[in-house]
Each structure stands twice: as structure tokens, then as C-alpha cells.
Amino acid sequence: MSTTPAAPQKLFGTDGIRGTSNQFPMIPDVVVRIGQAIGYLIRTKKISSPSQTNKVVIGKDTRLSGYMIEQALSSGLNSMGINVQLVGPLPTPGIGYLTRTMRAASGIVISASHNAYQDNGIKIFGPDGFKLDDTFEKEIESLVANTDLTKLLPPAKDVGRTRRIEDAQGRYIVYAKNAFPLEYTLDGLRIVLDTAHGAAYKVAPAIFEELGAEVIHVGNSPNGTNINDKVGALHPSLLSQAVVQYRADVGIGLDGDADRVIMVDETGKMINGDHILAICALHMKSKNQLNKNTLVVTQMSNFGLEQAMNANGIEVVKTNVGDKYVVEAMRKGGFNIGGEQSGHLIFLDYSTTGDGTVAALKVLSVMRETGKKISQLSAVFEDVPQVLINCRVRSRVELDQINGYDTLLKQTEAELKGEGRIFIRYSGTEPLIRILVEGSNKAKISAIAQKMAEFLEKEIS
Image 1 (cartoon, rainbow, N blue to C red):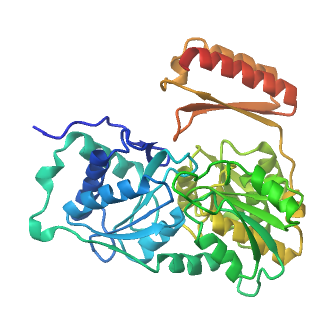
Image 2: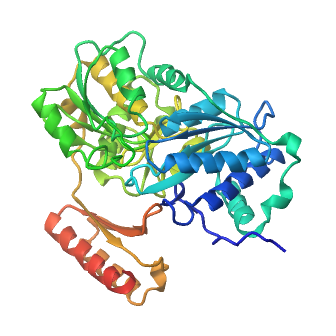
Image 3: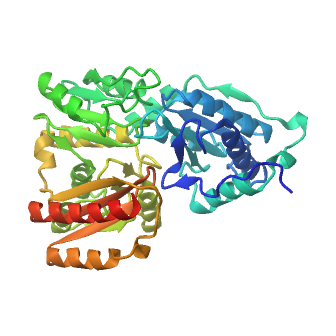
């Protein structure tokens, strides 16, 4: 019988494990067990690298709790005979890249992405640089919850070591710059860059500056508690103001782990992931670089994007919300560009996961090749009006189990008269339910969204 206290089964959301620091599951003893579970799968070759080495790369963002979790994970892995290589603050896609190129068995990112500093998380990559699939996630959950992992530890002579890699940032900088054409530079371009006081605070400025741009910094002084605090991809107002103030050509806003990006044009207008995808997909098609003339997006993307793509001979494939589902569809269908309206953008020719810096470089390359301002490029389509309301929930109840929900949904869908849609889902990373209503009449969709929100708040908030 196990002597280890059982943990609740569910650890993983739509993007790894996430929670408030010093609360389950982001507490040292649970994190140690997570490290041991990953280590056990590696030691038993259920997860293995081409070189068959028991090696794991760990990176993080700039959160205060990153030190604690880094040490706990390393201890758990070392106890299972796994050698750990720490790279310090580095964008999530950088860990995917290093995992693959260093022939590691796994890569782990300690980050809660766009969340506030109090939260933290664990994202796990396989040896191919892609995030682990649901099968391995369930196996890790089962090991943590139901197995006394201390009985599976190897003998003392097989305990692993931990060391730091000093040149990881330089490796990522060289890798990311490969996404920008060699025949072009960013000379004469003025960029305002907001790294959200996060993982890219050193590497992103170096990338754009080495390519010749003048870089003006916003949100680039991490102190452990200011990550994503009124800065970055989710809070672009400061970035927009700075672009106008400094008469910059473009603004680039990353989130805490730099796997997503939003951009700002020279007038201060925000450009979201849908418009960035449109810019890049159209340019790739014009150069015969768009695999199967297809773009992959999620259910949250604006209908205007789909209309614009179809008008230009590009098919749109829609997936569930979450960049891992986008990547799954891309790999299965052989497509090479996809992403989310929120700014998780995947260019599979360059990266195994969303990379905000690479996405920004692809847009900058289109600007250079066409000679157009980003405002001209982003005007390729007009957004169909959307209203999104987030409601906090106390528990996750299956929507079709809520009394009256199906009836209300049918009534409100009928009000749209086939000229819009309603999409409701639980967040995979926060205790929220998201209500998205889309249609041509802004007043009507706002009223419908409010009606649905009031109903759900009463039932599950």
C-alpha cells in the first residue's frame, strides 16, 4: 500500500500543469513527485531520446517561485537517475528547440505563461520538441496520485546530476534569427518591444538589435513579481502609447513565457493573432510556401479571417481552443502555419510550438519584402463584431447538465437568425467560463452575451 498521500487525479489543463504557488499542485512535495514520475517514464524508456540518454532540459520565466519549483523538479528527476541541465529564463519555444537539438529525453518549462506572478506551471516536451500528448499526461497523473514512487528509485550510485548551461540564450538567438530571410535586415526600423518582464527579456532585444533594428524597451525589467503586470501581450495599452510617442514603425508585445505575441501598427492600433496569421498565410501562399493552401485556427478565431482566407483560395481548418490542438491538427494534416487569436502562432517550418518572437520576425519579413507598413498589411480583412465575457466559476459542471442551458442556448441562437454564432467553453488555465458571441449587429450580440453570462453566473459562479 502506498505511503505517499494521494493527489487529486487531474493535474493537466490545456497547457500543462498550472496553479497558485505554494498551493496544490505547485507545492514542493507534489512537484518533486512530478519530477520523479517524469524521470520514471524516462528511465523505463517509455519516454526516450534518439541518443537514449537520461537527460532533461529545464527552463523557466522570471517568476519568484521559479527558483523553488526548479529545485524541486531537479531533485525529483535526479532521484530517479536523470541528469538535469538548467538554462534559466528562456522562452518556452526555446526549450522545445534545445530539447530536440541536445537530444534530450524531455524538456520542461516552468511558467504560468500570461498569468500573474503568484501562479506558476509546468509544461513538458517530448524528445521531438513537441508537447507531450494526453496519454503521457494521464500516465504522469496516475503515477503522482497512485504510486509510491520512493519504491521505484534507483540505487545511490545511479542518482543524477544537475548543471547549468551557460550558452543557452545564444543558441536560441541564433535559432530564432533563422526565421528572418538572410537577404534582408531591419536597418532603419524602429521597434517598441514589450517582453512583459518575462522569459524573453534578454534574448528578444538581442534578436531584433542584431538584425539592425532600433529597439525601444517597455516592460523589460523583471523583479520576480512584475511579470505580465499591466504589460505584455495581454495588456497592450502601454505598448500602443509608446509606439505613438516614439513614432515607431511597429510594436511587439510578448507574454511571460514569450510563446504568444500581439503587434501594434504605427498608429497605435493593436493587431491580434488572427490578423498576423492572415498577413503571413497570404504572403506564404504568394510564394508557394503555404502547405496545402491551408491555415489552422481555433473556434475563437474571427469569422472575418475565414472569409478573407476563403476569398484568397486558402482553406481554414478549425480546432478546439489550445495551441496543442492546433499543433496536432497541423502535424496530422501536414500544414505549416496555424494559431490562435490570442497570439499563439505556430510556424512548423521553424518551431514545434508557439513562438512570439519568430511570429513577429515573419511579419517583419513581410514588411521588408513588400515595402508595406504593417497597418496596410493588417487591413486584409475587417473583424466581424465579437463580444467575449469571462465569468469566474466555483466548479466545472458539464454545460448540458445545467438545467435550462440548452433551451436558452437554442433561443439565443435563434435570435442571431443564422448571421452569427455562440461559443461557450471553460478556460483550460483559469477558473473561468468564456462566452463568445459573434455577429453583424454589435448591440444584439452584446445583449445575447450578457444574457448568457447572467444565466451562467447564477448557476455555476
